[in-house]
Image (cartoon, rainbow over all chains, first blue to last red; front, side, top):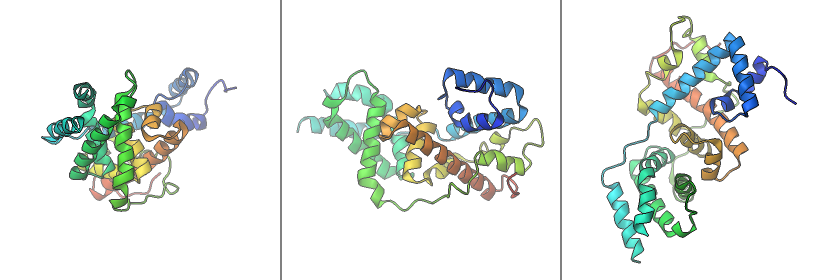
Length: 82
Length: 191
């Protein structure tokens, strides 16, 4: 049985899974309710969301080296004829 | 057969190369070889792939396994970051301690990470040990769910969650250290 409302400690423990949308619908709702009433946790949450976005932006997929696609294609065709 | 395989491979090739770069810690030649060898292995095993399922996860699993089998032993030892010494929300607390929240209009996450270069952030990720680096790369770059990551890495979802949690802590610490080193923030004690 889950409590009616989350404390800051409960919110904090679930924050990574909340950021990753890995909580159940019921847990997600309680996280949202907590955020509506707790400025401290809201500040943490806002920071973590921005951080996640920034890191994802900086880690954009590398550009495929020129020629790699053609090299793979040739190797596949050679393997197909083995 | 080749055409059918390539039709699935081509759309995920750039993503696979990105993961290979992270696994090989930015070694472009090794990443190229890894992707090429993985493509050949996947092609030879293509008859085992179930049509309609997640080809990207299937192929990335082959890339990851191949790396673990052939490349890992040859690479240098990772920078070891003690998770125990790193607090939860390390960056948040460090940013607080450095006074980045004093201006209510400030955006501390962007103030720190936004000013780091792509190379600095990539280096922070690449400094993590294999089991954390692979999971974090799939999470941050491929934006995979815990379940998808578990399919790629071949470990239970709970293990993915735990590795991701620890990997994030280590990554936050590395990012904060990079920001300190670059002189982007003051060297004050975390709050």
